[in-house]
Image (tube, rainbow, N blue to C red; front, side, top):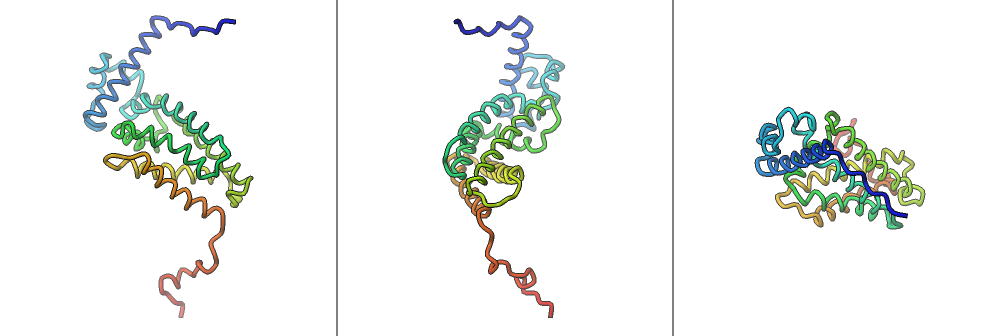
Length: 227
């Protein structure tokens, strides 16, 4: 039986796709060359050979344009990252496998990556916001599944809600990623090595409770006395 062929795009759809690709290319070029703050929507429209009004059909502002060019890649990246966790490796190695792909991805274009990572946190409104939120939600759900499995096999002894632990893991990862990308020439291997140390510190804390001998009263630690 012959495999189904994808239907050809009509002229209108083809023109729309080509226009979108021109806009994406223009955004990459101008943001990389002139910077996010300096590049203007008018310059982007001119470089993409589209009317300024047409540009607003694809994005409502410059921040929206960043996700226009990255959402599809982030979705594919998330798929690969979640597949990388489907192993019998220890928890830290599973998490590192998920994160390593992100470091490699963001190292390809540090200039644009810095813009993207800066705007990710508060991106909740825009033409591409809903899709981005879905992508991040899938990543968080994948981390949660890894955490729940680790709780079941005793790698994590905390009975805390796996959703909360997953969010904690994600925040450590997100913070480490931003710390790393701030380097002039971010090296993925060095970033991953640093993240692994942070994960080990985090997960070791979830495996056992601190000893009572380390829990001195706050007053004594600061040399205070009630007398």
